[in-house]
Image (tube, rainbow, N blue to C red; front, top):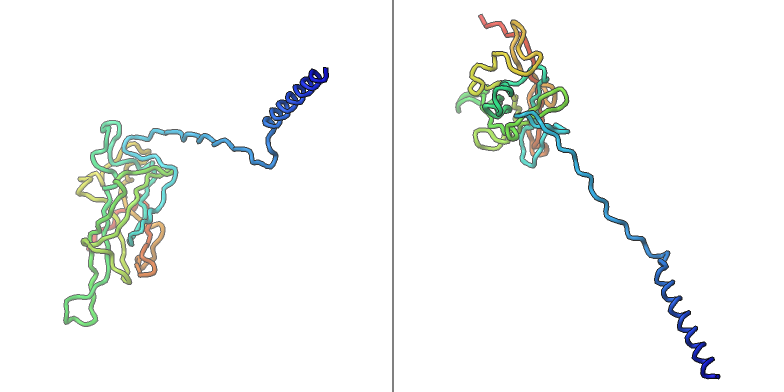
Length: 231
């Protein structure tokens, strides 16, 4: 009789131990941090852009580590594009390549001439960020950078006046003709397309220094009266 009671008590004790271990295993330690599930990133929507035009959310001056002059040329969309996307699935050239840049600076004349300087005009080798035009609100925008002049780095401590203009070698007369897709794509009578400075440059041009090896100059293409010929 005593043995049966002992075995029954032992069986109840083992049952209580098993139940206690199971309950404890299901309880979480309040001092232990709860694992946070990794959030799934929301995919960005993909938008289609007009052919020949890059759709971007932000347009600005591109400053790389290379010393030089950086900036943008923009024009209102109503002034149109130099090609008709409806007739040409692709532009006949990279649109931003319609611009060329000239740098003007004062340089001394030949040795032996004292106190005389001349204005030298150089064709700058501008990189027009893949040559693609982008959109920024109501504007088309081209981003450029000039880091070399005649194959060498731009000079320091010398004022340089940068003058962008339309490249007639690429446009082949289109710079004077009506453009396409814009509501105001042809200059009014007596006016022409012109590029004006809108920021980043003083009247004396831009000057690079060892402490400031970067400069910016932003431009806009507008309509302006045709200058009268010099008499």
